[in-house]
Amino acid sequence: MPSFPPPFLRTERLVLRPFTEADADHLYALDDDPEVTRFINGGKPADLDAIRTRILPRLLHDHPCTGTRGWWAAEEQAAGTFLGWFELRPLSDHDPAVVELGYRLNRAAWGKGYATEGSLALIDKAFTDLGAERVTANTMAVNTRSRRVMEKSGLTFLRNFSGDWPEAIPGSEHGEVEYELLKEDWERRRSR
Image 1 (cartoon, rainbow, N blue to C red):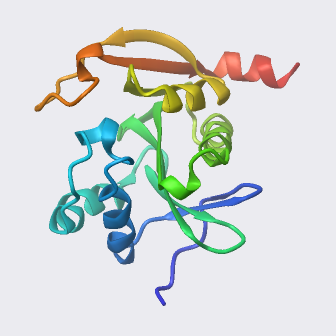
Image 2: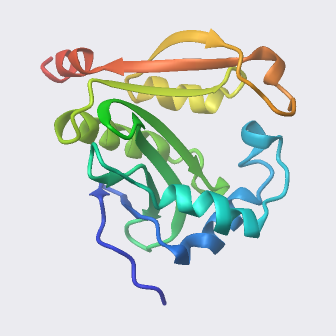
């Protein structure tokens, strides 16, 4: 059994820890589910070689401005089951002011509040410890589940936009949406 680094963050039910090379098979299983990747690539099968050579190195990248990685393996705290990942990465390696929030969980974890729980904890961490002034997140306009998580996490709709899709997938014709939460709005909500 691989040894994993210490957790980055714990919530009531989740452990978010840095990825390691030992997570390649977990990532493959996650990305090989066509329902999980329906709004990413239209549900195409995963490529283990691409995960090892392109995706995993990006997940292992340390951002100098925060001293942290930008992607975190999510495990169910009680059983240690791999659930997927969360993203909280600065848009610039040299400035922590704007961070992007994201998440991808396996189907067994859907509908249980994990995405919102992890997102809320990461937003708090961004504003209290990492120097963020703005949290942003985006998804396809038709991805209502992800949009609902953003809203439940305190982000508000900012704009519609057209992404650069190398290959159109069902729903991409409706464009994408961006949500945001500013630190001052987060502080105001916490003080109520």
